[in-house]
Image (cartoon, rainbow, N blue to C red; front, side):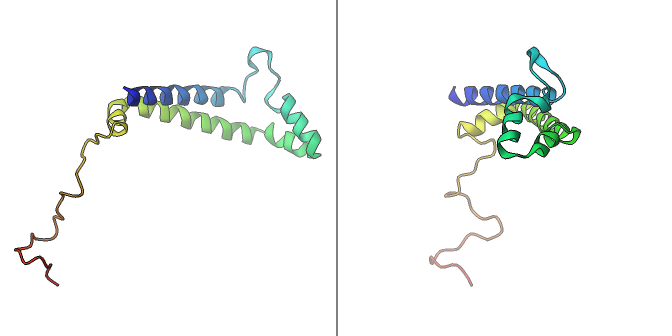
Length: 120
C-alpha cells in the first residue's frame, strides 16, 4: 500500500511541477509580476550588484529552458502513470523478472561434475 501511495505522490508532484514550470515563465497568474521583475530577483540583483542577472533570467532563453524542464516533468509524470503497476511492483520488492543471485547459475559455464574445483 505504501508503494502505491509513493508512486501516486510522485506522479502528482511531477504533474504540479511540470505545469508550474511550463506556464509560469510566460504568464502572470494571480496578479503576480512578470517573470523577470519579481521581488526576489530584483532584491538579489541589487544585493549582488549584478543587474545582468535580472536581464538574463528575463530572457527568452532562460524562459525556454525552464519551460523545457517543465515539459520534462510532465513527460516523467505520464510515463510513471502508464507504467504504474510496474513501478509499484519494483518499489514493493517484487521485480517483474527477479532472479535470486544466490541460486542463479551462470548460463555460459557448464555445471561442475563434483570435486569442488572449477576447471582452469
